[in-house]
Length: 454
Image 1 (tube, rainbow, N blue to C red):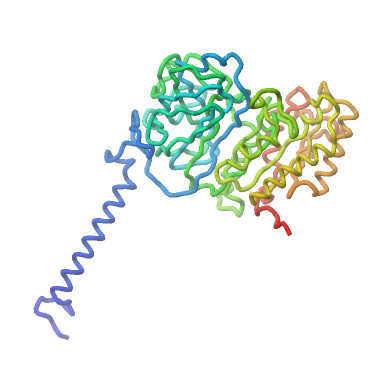
Image 2 (image 1 turned 90 degrees about the vertical axis):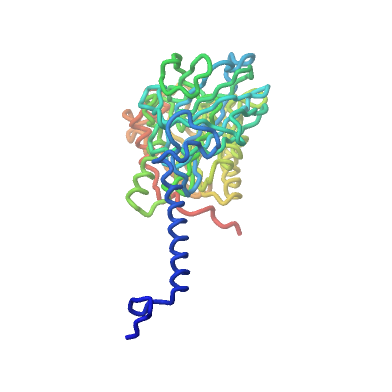
């Protein structure tokens, strides 16, 4: 064995050891920098959001990789009555929304679709709710939102804007508070009625308040806010539910998140946590009460726009959409001026499918559920429902079928909803009915993409 003059068995020459030491020092320096970066949430190094605005309180969540998916959404449905002149000027609007998937960062979309003048937002924040049925926020979760680096943004009439990214860890199932303030009139207000969720209003600028003291007015609407996206490790795509009041959750317990889409999101979350071979998707709800496939209501733009007219915005433009579930048709049968045309409804559904296939999206479609006992039920409408359902079940409309009719109908009189699944109006499901819907859909049907067009 040769012992070098620097000592040690087989030790390298001094110049080589010096080079090795320099390399090790460099690695240590880089590792420390990486550690400091990912540990920012636990220290005082960085208390700003990715959007660039300082958090009013607390610390920013760590930056992360992942996939952007939809955690929540709601379709802009109409111009809010009585807001044509002043809009929500001088009012802090605190929307409460439910996150259907977890993420390490968040961003929002605001809409002025129905506005006839520019919407000026001077302050906006995002935070986690301190608990159910409250406008209070967890203090260390409050983040200021910015838009292109500025806390102020002007949304043109008919337009929308997405915020910068805020570093906020959003757990699955959390209620998220998104608050906006506009000091100047801008109406009418773009809103989503029948939210099945209580939100809050405060006079004056209180967007960064963590207490609920100023938020003395409760409201059943979502205003301006149309989407919450998160950077997620849990999901790698979004499934969009396009529907009417049954998808909107009408008749379910407000604030309980018992819509069928909430139940489906819970199942996908549980499957991902268990490592099951199911799609890793989040679910966003694009239901509008009273919505039809073929026709919208009056106005420019139309209140409650038809599914055909809103498909691009509410489905194809959703974040990282992979599949769509369509639950529509009952309002076309019930509320058309004349008895709806069977072929017109089916052609409308096939048009939606073709548009989805053009983007490579798989389409799961539902049969039309029973409405026996509802005020507009007639034998002619019942026959039309049955004829449309027969065509849907044949496989000639959608890529896959979820038979909500079979799942909820009364086995002794299939014209009616089963009593325990009926909210009482004989059209909308009860909470048990919505749970049945959310659990009836086969998760495997969400696998795959649109069929190849030859």
